[in-house]
Length: 347
Image 1 (cartoon, rainbow, N blue to C red):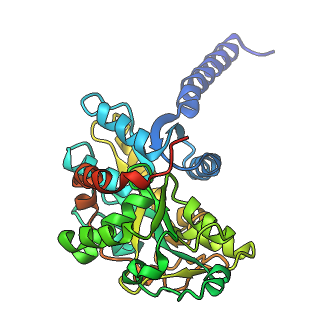
Image 2: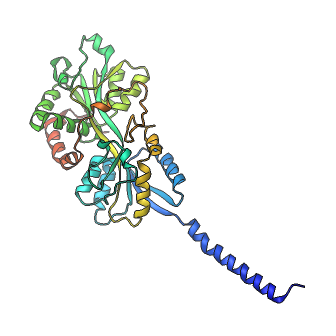
Image 3: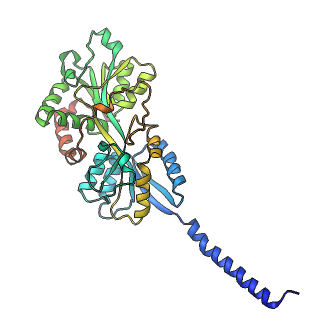
């Protein structure tokens, strides 16, 4: 016969076990929800989220996604009442501006020593760390060049030659990030006085300023224009499709911009935000970035797509992101005053 005492002790033990399980369930189920602001493309969001959450099962990403300009404006508007925890995938020039406004929580991610120097803010601790880079180069239609007996340009300086009159298209910097990084590079390479003088001369050869970073190389690839100044990856893609287009890395160097990661000041989820920043600099993360971009931050991750110019990364100029950010409005106002008459109509 089972004693009453045994039954009582068993019941108490069972109730204790149930209580322990009950207490542990919420802790096991609870996840930290990180609000992450981004300008990544829509098709990147799910793979990035899944890869990070697979390695950080206690954290859930909630994306706030829009174009670079919209996200930048939104974060500045929220400066005094920040709603985001982390930025993951936004132009470094925008993030550098946030840094000057005191909007970031500086943090050097674990593993940042594996990141190329140009992909870091250079501060201690870092205010942001880069992910991938996009560059602006020259797309030249060789078939059209032969028809018109036009020389293949080797430099930015070549583009102001009279033989290219009305033959060049480039992105409008007031509406295209690729356009802005292009003119910012010229002003840094040449100095401001010489840079504006160069753009005055180039303007004589410009057929149109287009509201897209990709479209100039597409137009050159189709033979609609002889020369397109535009996005590196789109140029490589068009050449791979069979277009008679050469991708030219000008000898003066290439303008570029980064996508980067940073932690928002005032986040209530700092520990989780640091985990994301740590993960964003890993080799695994950079291999994800390399599916979209040829140049990524992690030293040793190389994924040059077909027909991408092998010397492009070495030609990236020394780029001052804070200067780009601080002077953006002034430069764009001056550019618009001088050259907007040749801008394509906005759709």
